[in-house]
Image (cartoon, rainbow, N blue to C red):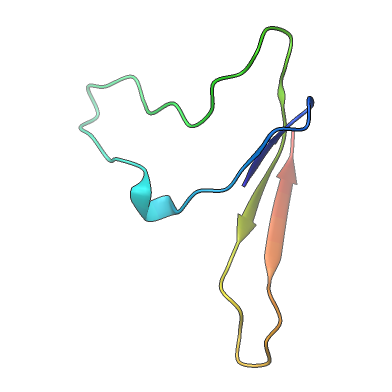
Length: 60
């Protein structure tokens, strides 16, 4: 998940992000409006056997 300061939240599957050779400039995951910034990135994993969802979060 990617969250911006303006409140936009995008959730995407990692396997849907294309992997290209190292000669490229990367992959754009979100297009930000002027003045907007990425506020947080969170990794959401599938539920474990007890039905609890595990989340790790990195803040910039």
